[in-house]
Image 1 (tube, rainbow, N blue to C red):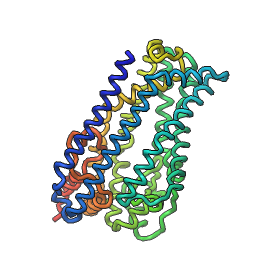
Image 2: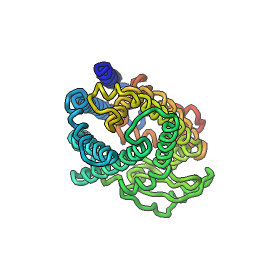
Image 3: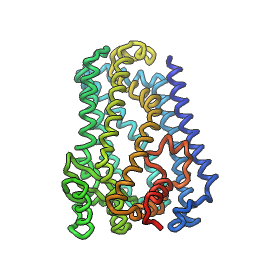
Image 4: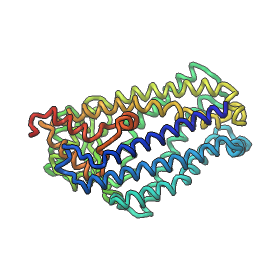
Amino acid sequence: MKFLILGLILIKNIFVILLNLKEKSYIKKNSKNLPEVFKDVLDEKKLELSNSYNIEKLNFSTISLIFSKTLLIIFLFSPLFGIFSNYFESLNTHYLIKSLLFFTSLIILSTIFNLPLDFYFHFKIEKRYGFLKYNFKGWMKDKFKELFLNLILTLISILVLIGIVGNVFYFSLIKVIVVSLIFIILLIIFIYIFPTLLIPFMYKTEKMKNDELFLKIKEIIERSGYRFEGVYVIKESEKSTHSNAMFTGIGNKKRVILYDNLLNNFSEDEILGVVGHEIGHGKLKHIQKLLLFNIVSVTLFVLSSFLILSNSYIYNIFNIPTNSFTGIFLISILISEIILYFFNPLLNSMSRRFEYEADSFSKNIIGNGLPLIKALKKFASSELSNINVDPFYEFFYYSHPTLTKRISELILKDQHVS
């Protein structure tokens, strides 16, 4: 059974590597293919730079995968896992404290092992292509913030699970329902409330000045049926040249969050087109629909975890005590590594459909699709987006349709575009 689990992990990750190689081959094969919709903003030199950037990211992704999964396999399928878990089991303290110490140690070790890879990505790849703005100190500060958030979220989840289940895992429909409900509540808090707290923690933000653009954004939000809370600007230019926009808030009270790079490099009409798209996600209830999918996923995860952990076999093959809290780690690895990964295409297909719908909403609320079309073209140029994507790779990984498809769809729907 142990070798079957190892085999499944290897097969899944070989599949990932093959997908990366397939995408890399597709980019090279279409390296000279410049879609008609981009010929006014991209030239041969820019296309070559975009191809180089995306191939380098694929190479990095493959190397990172091999490195991280090799470490995981060595840890799980050698005596290391038993030694590590038994050390925490042997501590003379409460079961809950042991659990928290075990998971805290795992998260910190994982962060340390991933630091060199993350450093290389930012200070070699991102810097080489002109995206990186901040220094080593700023990067490390962000890493500590990410570690803190990771610890908080993971430890809250463990507290909830161990607090309800205790140190005996046996299948109980009541426990499955209670644990699922609590995790669903935590998920809702994370989606709707946490961003309001998270963004100021991770970024420098300020309120947007009450200028003409501010008033136009306010007008669009109110015309969409929301109460306007304000526009906030993230100082992303201190870290990178990347641009983004978000639409958040609880209930009917909404705020828009814009990267300052978007304000600095995009025209007023283009920004309104992007904001209209983000409002569309809220108005068309895309977050709620994705939440339903995640609720089903959480429930299935909890159900399968209880079914597996209530059987002593999983503990025996990894040489850990029955009902050990380390079993939670094993299950989370096995389910995320093997099962949940293959749910991605379904979730991404829903997300891609929602992107088309939000694009249409932006077109309708603005009056025409040209502002968003121009913004998407500018994104393609400034972000070095991959405009020639392998169809199967897109199906499996892309939560957004390719920019080529989105622009083409908007042009088809917009009679004002000449």
